[in-house]
Length: 305
Image (cartoon, rainbow, N blue to C red; front, side, top):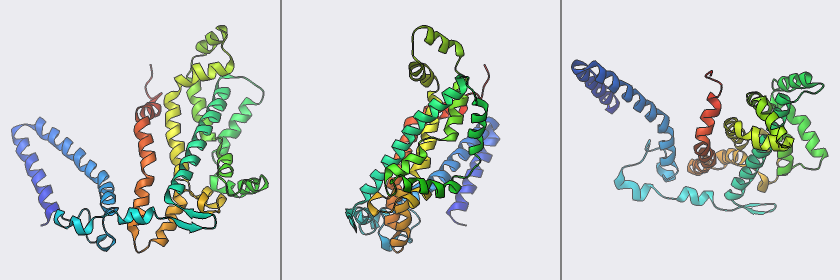
């Protein structure tokens, strides 16, 4: 028997002992034990990653997690980060890892911001305005969601080339300025805004843009936060479009570069893992900042009343 078997046996014995004394305490213990085991399973890959980025390449596969404390001096160091932050020569000069990080940050942030603005405005118009062709436009928008994005890469690339924006972040951002999925989400959220509030704002002399910014957007903020997180993750982790539209080394984004690191650091995967760990920080920070609004946006409309 190994450590795992002894641990399971000890947990079962504790449950049996508590069950003989009080069934309520036993089931409470079982519930917290299962939650703790689930947390351990979920957090184990992150613990392994944290250990791997600091382990020396010679002992990367020798220990599952952290080596014994007595060997930290010879097995734990910052060599992976030193190799990661070294400049790499390119046709346009030396490129550093932070250049790729900045490219991804600009691309994901600008695209997400523009998508929220345009998608929310379109969703508000479809929800609260009556105009000719509204039904056909809504059906077209919903139907476009059924087309895989990969099928549109070729015509989008041709359009970007014709506009002279190939190999630039602007050419990467332009085709993603509006999201049909975002329009649908904001349309559904704006339909829950009472028409009486909009009419009262008009009577008070508020303009249509004023109604949009001061009345509608504050009420649909949970949905906006949820879409912000989903859109940011989609563009931060985007690979196909940046890999096709961007050609210069200094314009690449993190997913493309990390994919190149898989082969470049095949014998020193700690460098690739260090870059992966740093790439996880912005999405994690955004989720923690929008956690409350994100959960509220996902559960909005789940309860009547």
